[in-house]
Length: 412
Length: 165
Image 1 (cartoon, one colour):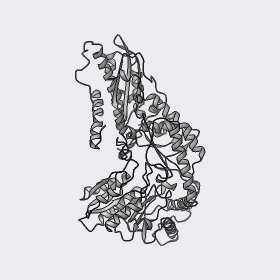
Image 2 (cartoon, chains in turn red, green):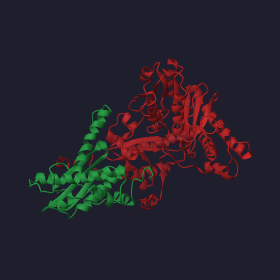
Image 3 (cartoon, helix red, strand yellow):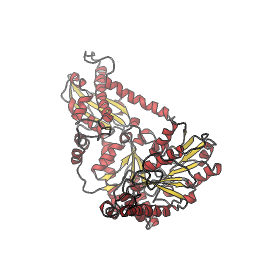
Image 4 (cartoon, chains in turn yellow, brown):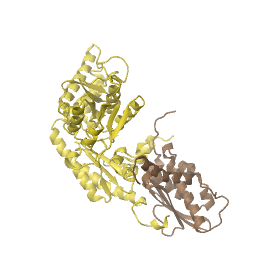
């Protein structure tokens, strides 16, 4: 069978590399790695719920990480549950709340059309167990219409899940207003938000927002993979969806990934040091990338809003007449690492539901490319990407029969 | 057997993707055909130069993933110098084989390329009002049918999402 190692030899290592795929995962800075290392074999390598010194040292990591994250989110009366990914947190929020439901008359789960699959799919699974999934459409920039949400809520509504920031097109929802609409109508409706792409990019205050549950994820903020959190307000009842030995927490059994938590703690600390300055800088780089692409490449559409309603790290464009998976490969060979919403990259052969939901045509979704800026990028990185994108698109457009008139009449 | 999704590509696909052969429109083509649809994310256009029942030259254009581009490119290599009958007999499995193998989710790229080629051959025989050779079936071949199904599928998808194409 084919080996990835052979493929990588053919690919080669580009002389300059700019990683712009922080949506899907990312690298971990040395300070974060250094924070993790002692916890593999020097301290805290025990089980955090066992009464011995390495166990208590492990517990200290949990405690201090949750304390720090809690401060960044203004948590006082709730719990932060440690999971191993944003996907797990979203599943726990939706399925865990459903399992704990006492009022069987409530069976409607309302989610936006552009939620992450780890919100949509658990909700679909619940449809097999008597729930009904209702999807709210979004406008052409990805915003949920508050009036439409209000019209959809009724006495049957059990839960609403709307993400704080869209993972593909960076739309920042007006969460405060959406929560207010739901809660004013009915206090009992649970409001969950997937904030994986919002945390450390926009200010989040669980009290001010009035949110019941919130998902965050470590590897989206330069932390290691393997840590997710779910904030659960104290008045919300959930049940565990995994069963196992009782550990330090009720809702997610299994030993916590202590070295990864130590790394996440450091990543949080770094992200919130000079938070505003970092975010402002990301916005400058984001806008430079958007403007540069539009200026240098013809036939491009920006997906998602511009300005203050767009996440500071998100750039998403559709290059017309070319297909996204080819673009990611072409750019990869040039050392610019991005992802696409094309069907060919999804493995289910349907293009991004997010790009379709904002009213784009299929071929526009196939040509969509997602870039995510991080605070570690330099102006030079963005300029390098901008030097590679136009020739990459140009080469693929030379191969493509679309967007040109020649020989058109020769084909039926 | 593992259920993990296999790596999409062989080194050969990447090599051809970077340096495709026989790329571009052919000004003096005897026949041009197209298969696939932009909405499906897959379009292959095939140009053939035919003389005395033999393919003297072939070229392609492709809108699609790396497998799509590589399949079209290698197919144009495979048909050069072949008679129309020999070209008709090329199977999508042979194309996939030439590419160093394709995973199941990319088979349709190879099928589409062969579908495009078969369309070109059928169209050439129709347009030049030649008598239908016995190796050319009246009914569409599997690959031509699949190309057609893909083209029709997108209308169904638009319908499903409640939108006009």
